[in-house]
Length: 48
Image 1: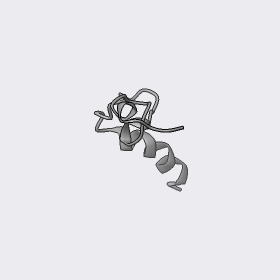
Image 2: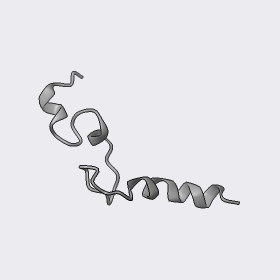
Image 3: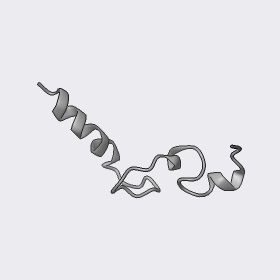
């Protein structure tokens, strides 16, 4: 499936950071806690 320039302008349709969609987090990636949201479960799981 080819990716056109117009796809890159729409979150969730093209490539780049906007293609990553995390439940509960704005698609535009404006949430500064995005990294913590992803890592926190792993921190708890592997902390011991």
